Length: 296
Length: 289
Image (cartoon, rainbow over all chains, first blue to last red; front, top):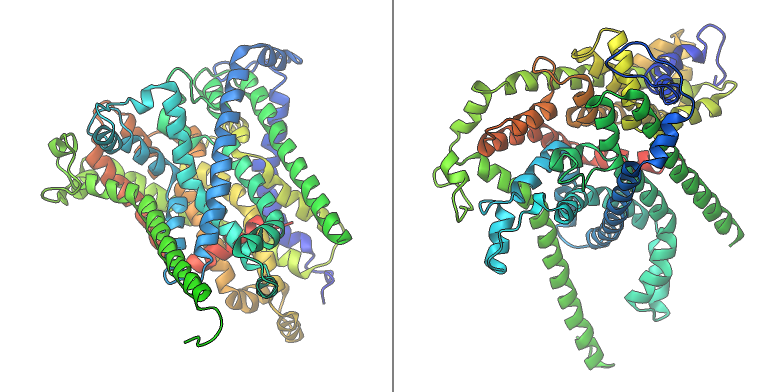
């Protein structure tokens, strides 16, 4: 029965899914690779191959490295906060307390509402003048206040990170909660009988057994934050003075504001390569983790 | 209660337990407050008059709630257009995704064939290609197809983006449906397609619902591809509408707040109604190997 019986071959079933994926995911990816070796522009239909020129001018120029540095600062900070706060939230809402499910649900609301609204809301709260609610509170606590959050390069980055952490932490919570719930309860019972404290239980049971979940979580949020576009673009537009221009925004502007799609495609390919690097590291760590568990 | 033993230790433990509970509840309150505050602030702002919006010191609650703002945002702006576009794109895409993923999920769950593992890997692997890096050539392809600034462009690309995860979710769901159901139906002479649609689909409703939910929310929220492909009023979805609203020269935060509430309401309602399936799907989608 499990074997495909002649008349309705499995190809009939899986073909439509693959048609979509080939036409709108794989083909565009290959097309981008080809485009990255050309001087194509959105303004003129003709283009010619220029070899590695896009890549060399990209890697020689300063803008790209500035964008990359901004992206890395953004990704590192956001990921650390999301991971740690997500773990904290997971531990908190995993306790057998009244209301834990309610807290989980509420926390996840931040993750399901559209990114655009999250960005607009934080923009509205952090807006520079005193009617911005954050500035009002800030001025009450630390007079005279009146900080131009989104007009100052460093502070705009700070707001972008806070916004991204606010939105993304609940995702980490869900994953780590699933990890926590897969740890057998009897391990803690044994430890408690042997006189282990709660802290020891956390350090010696929870953390090691949660490691695989945390690695998966880490890679997921690293990829998501590395490719972030909407949230930061709506919040700051990449400014002020390009201080929050993460690499995806730079690529978007290159392609759809300056119309240099060949050059933008080479940026896309480098982004893609960095994504791939993350995935390879992820698979390596997972394999090593599995081997380690097999040996233990 | 404990006549013998070490009462002092018990006392300390009890005290620290109560303290622990207190701290846990304090942090619960903090989490709820931090999550809900921005949403409630938008809600409050959406009910204010223009002068009250820019008043200093700001008022926490509107003096007299201006429910008329919600009417205004539908009549004075193109919000109704964006809302209809979002509904159309999300519903059509979701229907298509569920149909295509049902077929593929069934194919992967019930057939053994050469290269099955490799094909599964390719499908899952495409999820690692970020939408941002593909956007340039997706734009060119849609231009070639004459679909720029039309809703079908969004439907096609959103379907392609959401199909891999949906196939995976449905394959794992179908794996839990007993094979004996297929066999009994096959004995009665049902074709494979009949088996899928009239036997397997009805018993897989929770799995189908979760898949549909994910796809709907993803389409409803998507911003970047819509910005690239459809940014005229005619074809904009809610996220683009809100974005253009805020970049206009005289931004009205109270109306923008009302529009934001309208835009987030459907996903919040769907999420709360189906949160168990949502969380299960999220976890399954992330820990696939």
